[in-house]
Length: 96
Image (cartoon, rainbow, N blue to C red; front, side, top):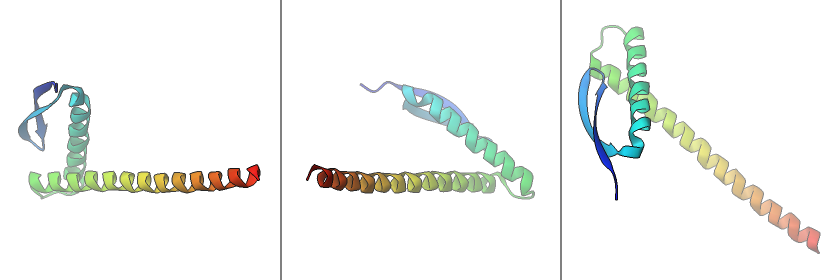
């Protein structure tokens, strides 16, 4: 059974009520903090925009970072598979 809880978070001066898995609370709060830190960074560096612009820029940054990490993980997985195949071939040759 999934243990859901309701939390309140603030992203870019807006309140959101979320229903999440209790085990995910810490990571959700860390993610909210990361996004808000980026919003503040963009707000400091790009004066004259509205909050929605800052939140959009922060979320675009966050999604890009996640995609970079995902691409790295895929590349690493492909490398591991190739190394495993190579190791199997070498083992077969050594057995002969």
